Image (cartoon, rainbow, N blue to C red; front, top):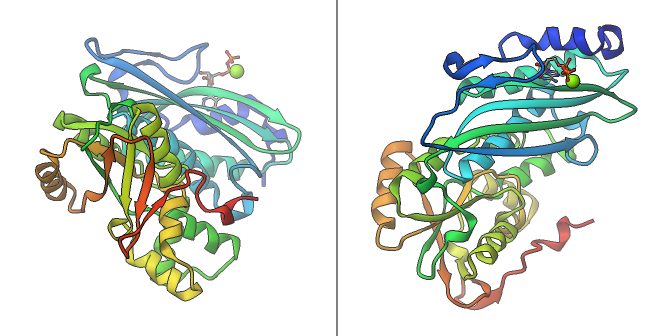
Length: 336
Ligand code: ADP
Ligand code: MG
């Protein structure tokens, strides 16, 4: 076992350098100089996003493996690029490591990031390393690109648009519950839920597909939960929305979980969070065709769960047809 304090900052950088460059065409200089140098594609705009993860605030060491933590740290950033309809290109990883931290664990974090980077052609081109008194802190920044006219802004939704998601919602929150309860997770439904929480897939390909149609007016990734993220989208667009409870994309795995502990899966779907699927507002006249194309390309459903309205309210239509105001703060149960 090696501790971070045994090898220090530079020993550490040497250890993780290998395997960071998976897509060398645009790289002029990666790790090893004062700044990274890469070519950008003229005619496109550059996207840049960053997310900070702090131990005991965003993750607990006991809850996930190093590989999973690394995978997820990069995935949440790639998801932000996906939500803009962009292509992710390079990542920068800054890390503050407690001295007594095992180096093998940090290497696993990098293994997780490199595995995801390889999957989506994203290089790790640099970062910064420092010590920390107690907690591990990871900051990931991702650079991407897009055609300016294809970018999916939160502000583009128009009354009449159909609200869709590119995947199921609520699974990740159920996975977190299982982890926190230290439940046995070898049952197949439960392992799907756990995976949704610890190894989320960024919907980059789905985001590109939606952006290329030219008929998707707005998008956001679901990180806080449908009710909060929908509110961000409607606020930025100056519109309202109605969501149909019987159209919520709830997986059979989440249903199984909720039946086993007598919870309403609708609450998980509305307020769960960390699903990292995309919520988008699609031109109503093009939606049928786009959903068909989506199914053909990805072999899965583009779920149509609601509509954009003119009023600035967000409402949910219950399975009995009655309307409820939808609280953006989600499920009080989740609050401390
Ligand atoms: P500087 O002193 O100029 O900040 P460093 O010695 O911190 O340079 O970094 C040396 C090289 O290693 C740089 O290319 C930097 O981007 C890279 N680097 C440092 N820390 C990390 C890290 N945690 N992950 C990836 N690359 C890193
Ligand atoms: Mg430095």
